[in-house]
Image (cartoon, rainbow, N blue to C red; front, side, top):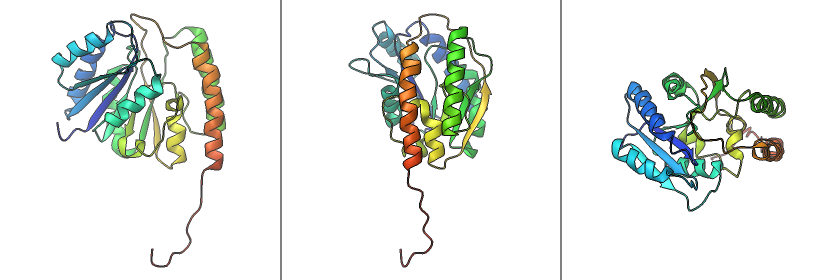
Length: 240
């Protein structure tokens, strides 16, 4: 596996029951792409059978590379660990709860050569009304302030060019603002509609505090970064 094109990165916390079907669906989607790939699964301090299931799935799919945190560090840390382990030219991210449909991966991958970041846009969300409303308000505020051109940054289904990703430093909570961070660097960002499914088992690891108050503070940090970034242009140089 020396010429890996795609690295699939999935943060996981207590999703043991959802993993077998999800990994089967990912393998099917990657078979359609017909390129070498790997799947980096990060167990973010799970207290269920997640690690045991991951080891069994590794036996079924040699592309699976599981790693386990010593405790729960959060989704951004899990993404960061996966990004640093990735060997592919492109990094594909999605949630472990099965709500992102891996069947959408080939559609996004078809546009990858022309973009640096492709974001999924959940057109018909299968979440409860309160969660959809909170997400809609948060996305509207973020998009208006940061002008990143993305209306659903909360969708984890994304494809990122790893060469660009390596230039983006991540801090706690910053995975939510990857489109804005890419845009600030002058990278090309595209949004494509994707499907969204109901959770089949388990429960969400997110609640009001980590879906609203935390991201609001992070929003102002990113806004400060955007306002304070260096924007000089060299008119002439002599021998450089």
